Length: 147
Image (cartoon, rainbow, N blue to C red; front, side, top):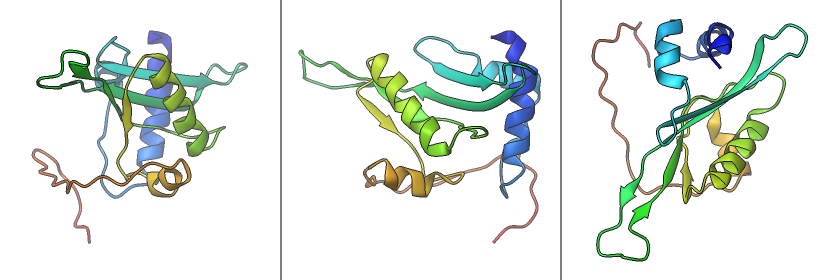
């Protein structure tokens, strides 16, 4: 909901401060990238019932692929983990919930990168290691020197 955007933006910003390289998003950016759009982006938050502050967040986006030459299954519906912020629940619990939600939305696969502390949780949840090698090209980013 739109009312959660300011609180969720603060939660994500606080979480991302713990990493050497991460985007800095204002509320307009957060709204653009995270407000749910069916078939595009799915974001769920938990909030404290008393304060109404967002305490946890999970998100994933859809990236369907065409399966050439398969009339029975013409599309592979893939969900990709986006940003997940544990607060009152563990990262493992958030990703378990993301898997359940994605399955309920009829996604065929759920992909996640071993970024932002995901590595141990992905192993615990029995994610298979991919066979690709990702290369990152950053432009218009300002950051300190890193090793």
